[in-house]
Length: 94
Image 1: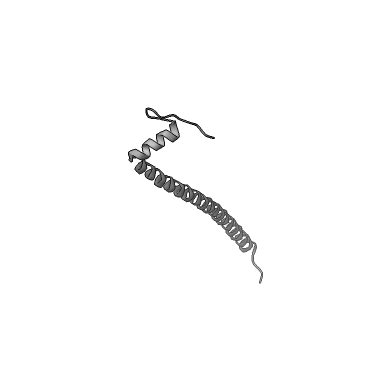
Image 2: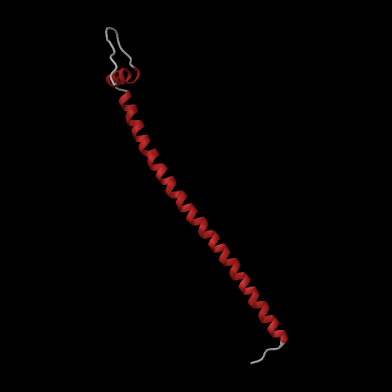
């Protein structure tokens, strides 16, 4: 089936337009896919950081509870800061 020159030009133009539109859509999709993958990695990193912070918070809350105990606080000060009460001698070990 033969097409006139006008019809061929129109078909070529429509074909080129379809190819350009498909290329643009492909570019947009790949760009969005890269963004999605990057965001998933960031989410994983942030979840790991969150878990670490939650564990640290639990540890610090536990330490606060312990430091409210006068006996623990005295022992902690003696060990950590070499604090001594009267008539006590501090001997540093390795």
